[in-house]
Length: 164
Ligand code: SF4
Image (cartoon, rainbow, N blue to C red; front, side):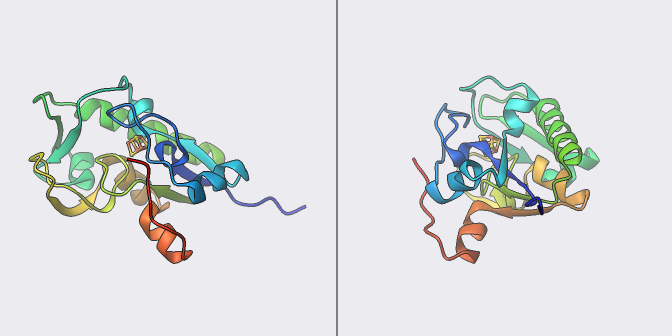
């Protein structure tokens, strides 16, 4: 029997209440991937040691690639430098992907951990800039294909609606 390759999926997209405010971003189409055992759920912020809920964070002075190089930081809205927790979550996520032989991740758009292509600009004003979240950057750097939930749904002609 040929084993289907699994993907990593941001846990909030499958309905896990792990977002900073204790909610989720459930999309039933993406949850189905988990239900069908095609996806492994992960939450880099939980893996990094954040409690839920916690203040929201954004990347200042660059994106996740810059954080990996030590040229940018992740700060919480309360002004705390939370870079260490984000780095820990990224490393643990990478170890998980390696252990399971995973080559692709579908990740929540715009998150400072999971965002791929666009993230919030670090000023907590709802504005976006180009770049990757910290975990998305580390996975990508290690050859794992990272795409957002929105790209996945668009590519598969499915509906882009997340729980609020
Ligand atoms: Fe966790 Fe990523 Fe979802 Fe944030 S976007 S709650 S880090 S899985």
